[in-house]
Image (tube, helix red, strand yellow):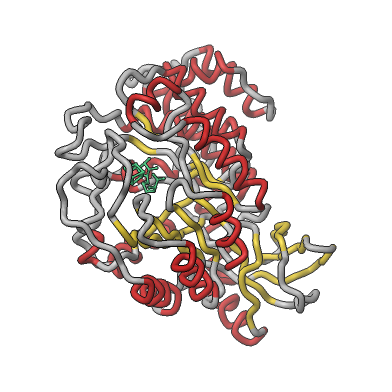
Length: 430
Ligand code: SAH
Ligand code: SF4
């Protein structure tokens, strides 16, 4: 099983290398001292994470050789714009601008979001146009990261979250060795090249613990994403030095009033400043928002997309709020799949070259949601690799998808889906 295709270094200029995947070239960051032109490497998130012997690389590339072009053909076919009759004229005008690679104004983005669920012709054109932009800009590359949810303790009480401090649930903490072992299995047995380490805001893990976990996992030559909430910049600097290179942290909502209401004892500005500072520290940023918070307007959603863009993230991560039983928002009505698909497409128009994650919360909305998301502009996925006894307890929302399935099954289903859509695990570069 391969989640990444090795590329060959064809150019090196200081820290920027050009990697070739069967003729397709990507710029990547090189932090290795001993890399030279002609070497084979794995890149993730635009960073070279591992060098691999030529013999091994050629073997893997041989496997991919025919498949790679076959997949591209499938993707090209599926991503053609399909204009049918009776498309809303304003939508047609806006999408014309998209085709000409022009930036859309806020009112145009709002207009797309306001298209009615019943106007399926316009909606389908929006989705296929977004998929077309994705294909033209990034080809069929799709990244699949593993995620380890290592603790469900949290000192916070976010109203929407099922592991909030005041919810009475069985709590767990994986010991540092267990986390490292889980990452090792994800890398060596399942082939992941990027792992997200996620938890509630749990200060049982001090800097020393976190640094040693990151250092050990970095030895597996993968990209390490942190998703541990607000910590001091000093901590994040130490973790960067230990080898972490990416942070997944959503600002959750651009609406300060909603933020203040739903995230007691946390601070909007602090979170925003943290995201900016992490970027300055050199971290790859994945950020975004929740969709469907009480009193949220369409304008808030457009502001959320634009705020995400302002951080120049590597990846957009947004998904619907799914009620968690026993939380203050347990009775909130979940946003519908169509609205989320519109948001995915609009995001693709706003930031043509970004990674847009299809989240597992979105997957809960329907059986086809994941597929539909990938066909509407999405191009990234995560697979849960948390040991099953813990994954059950990491209940940020109720009825999480695929929790009962084995990791092997989830991987198999995801890979089958990606192949059916013609997507390949090449890195997207920077
Ligand atoms: N504690 C860290 C990371 C864990 S929570 C943090 O808050 O950043 C990870 C994400 O889960 C949050 O960013 C939030 O957007 C999402 N989340 C929490 N409750 C949710 C719910 N009920 N439905 C969908 N997503 C939820
Ligand atoms: Fe804690 Fe994150 Fe849940 Fe808020 S969203 S309660 S910070 S785990």
